[in-house]
Amino acid sequence: MMQRRAVALLVVVASLVVAMAAVAGARTKAHVVKGRAATAWAGNIVIGGTIGLTGSFAAFGAQEKMGDIMAVDKVNGAGGIVIKGKHYKVVPKFLDSQSQPGLTTSEAKTLVLQDHAVGLFGTTAPPLVIPLSQVADQLKVPLVHHTPIQAWLSGSKSGYPYSWDIFFNETQQTTTQFQAANEVKTNKKVVLFTDTDPDGISMGKLWTQNAPKYGYKIVAHESFPEGTTDFSSYIQDAQSKGAQVLIAQMIPPDAAALWKQMKAASYDPQVAFCEKCAYQSAWGTTLGSVANGTMVSDIWSPAFNYPDTKMILSTEKDFGNKINPGESGVAESFTDATVLMNAIQRAGSTSGPSINAALAKTNGMYPVGHVKFNSLHYSAVKAFQVQWRNGSTVIVWPKIKGGSSVQAPVAGLK
Image 1 (cartoon, one colour):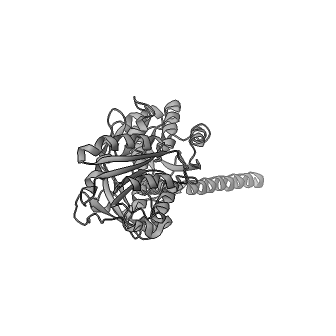
Image 2 (cartoon, one colour):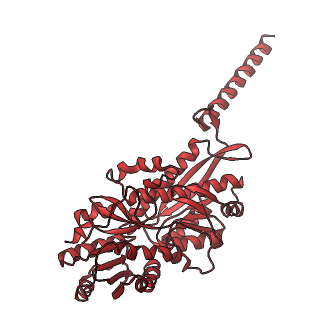
Image 3 (cartoon, rainbow, N blue to C red):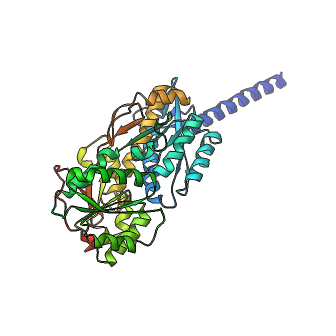
């Protein structure tokens, strides 16, 4: 009898141990959602990002990672992605492409095939986005990104079945420089500085086409490969031809060298635009006062009060407590990541084709405005012009409440 009781007691104790272990295990998987009881994660959903955290696009990569993580934290904080009544935690996986197209390709495959990413976070530079889009198509894994639309489509005129773009369309963006320049008096003579990257090529052609429509004349077009460091002959050419309007499309390190050399050569045009190059917070920190007066296209501003504006503004401390394109880069990546995760939620599946079909039905307001994709998988956001002033930027075209007027000549180059 005593033996039976001992055995029975052991069974009860063992059952309690198993039950306690199960509760403890459940607790390790639980997350707390504000306003309701804790919910156990049913599993993880991996989304991958191969972005340039080092190399020539590092300034963009830092902003992109910040925006992606903010979007993921918001979704997980609200209960994750719900599929068939079960809550799944989104787990971001980032790899550093070192700003190299070849590494972007291999890392994207690693994220999908080894880390089992069901979707891909995007980046901005066409030399990286084009190969990333090709991998997305090959593996049938959706990618949402933000890159100049025509430059992106130059890699595939028919578009990319699994790649989706939310950014400005250069056909509109390449008119804003001339319209902003019209705010001040110039001799209408323009010099273009464009590298041989896809966006440099596409925008160079569009500026050449648009100049006469706005009464401007291209007197010099300086073209060079990425990585050029000596611009002395190009600067002399622009000076000799009397160009008072400068429009550049370059990677940030090359452009910083150009601006310093223009300052040293006393070349001070009335207006100067630095597309891509000045579209990141490091433009102000790298060049200091030399950055003042530079104009650049932008697509986000707190003035528009789009969704999640307060959340985007919370990153101001990471950008010198200034309003500049650093926050815009965060807003763009936050939008990309949110659009992708919303599609996974609507699809109710982690299947690539199902998510892709849900992305096609995207229609809503996000931090960069209204997003609705067309048949070529892009949603164009209207570009405007901002001008750098002591680490901050202010909208100078078009005229809006809270904006400013174009200041000329270029203060940092005087």
